[in-house]
Length: 284
Image (cartoon, rainbow, N blue to C red; front, side):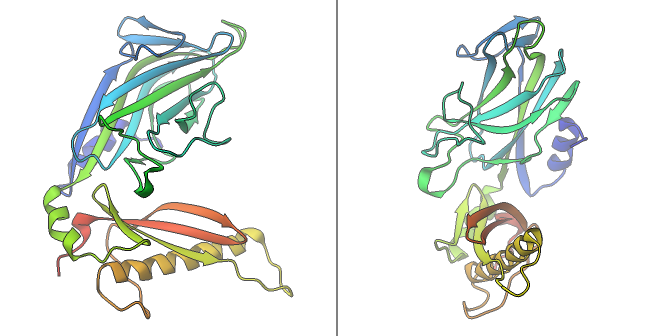
């Protein structure tokens, strides 16, 4: 993502549909449980050293935070990868892809970059949702505190380890208006496939890859077909949640709908979760 975090904040703040609040910490404001980080003026020098370096930053999330984005202003001193992790207070541990053997399993990889420096904004995903049903994912915790960790790989100090000057870390907290939620939520038909989370209506659907032994086709094409089918099912479930049509058929389309998550469930099955801001849903 090429645009700066300041521009992102300005664009979002221009809309009355959401309430945003930007929080910023100087690089030197890292938490006591950081490793191989030291203050350098208002910035922090983060070094991997022989094992790894970790600079932890904690933010008090505003009330009603439904999701948050992040930005880091830094300089890459050795051309290495800088990794950004977010702390999950929920029950789901990080796996081999999102975890790091040098860190607590509650730290989950958000993204990484080897850019030379500047303002690095979150993009994969751009937003992290504050929590999810079932308690597996909770990024605010009991004290509504967002924790981010910047990670430098280890190596031979000054030659092979990662070294970064962390100048500032920022988050943008986003919450749909409470008035919209209060008006819309009582009108929704929620279920295991449709629920309200952080000011958004989330709806999921599943689709399966077509099986034709005479025409096996391309794996990517079959997966795309399964994803399209899952999206259609999610749109039908959205219509049911809105109380617009019976479960027997039909779809629902609203402005602001976007795909939040796509999962491969195995055996050719795909699950798609779509989201709609509550204040994009018209009252009946």
